[in-house]
Amino acid sequence: ARKIVVIGGGPGGLEVAWIAAYRGHNVVLFEKEQNPGGQFRIGAIPPGKQELAKAINYSTHMGEKYGVDFRFGTEADADQVAAENPDVVIVATGAKPGIPDIPGVDNPKVVTAIDIITGKEDAGEKVLIVGGGLVGCETADLLGEHGHKVTLIETLTEVANDVQESVKHFLMLRLKRHEVQIATNTTVKEILQDGAKVEKDGQEKQLAGFDNIIIAVGAKSVNHLKQQLEGKVPELHVIGDASEPRQAIDAIEEGASLAIKL
Image (cartoon, rainbow, N blue to C red; front, side, top):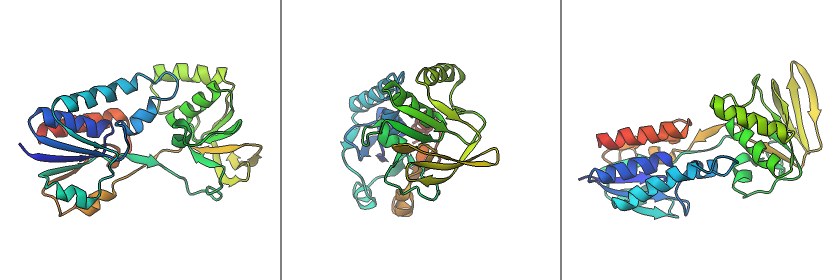
């Protein structure tokens, strides 16, 4: 049996941890939040997404059953990890919301979609969402359901491009029912006091009168521990969004296939 330290309790980290433990390894998992699931737990909050929580509960339960030493509420640093004397370290620290390099993005009315979904920030009545992918659309769906007036802008020709067709169909119906205003082919040039200066089809215009501007434009990998641990531990792997932001299913698959090779 090998001593394995997993950093991050999102879908990929949980998967690699329980399967490695099931296969007889000695596994410790560090997670900075008090609960497992990472972005996946947040993903279970928008309407129609509660099923996702079951996957997290299952892999956590399997980890407990096979003896994973879960350390929730612990943000591991390189020294803590090295102190465990691991044979293998797996960095599964996920991703954080990407903040675009737009003038005015530091305006106090600007918040991230994650902060709105988790309730860390409250949205005003009238909101402008920048980014019409899955996260932007789900934020619009959640806020629309709660009676907010939502405008959603996307640079591409259509919104919800990264959403599976069958899911997208119902998501778009709900956005229509919530009277979400959608502007595609629209790029934000600057964030203003209560809105944004945008460009659509070569024309610049201003969108104003918003209480909040919500940023929902993709994610950036969090993997600073990789640099800090290189050369300090015998074997190091980076999986899931920490190596490249993608779908949760990719992280789970990567976790499972790595666990089998350990």
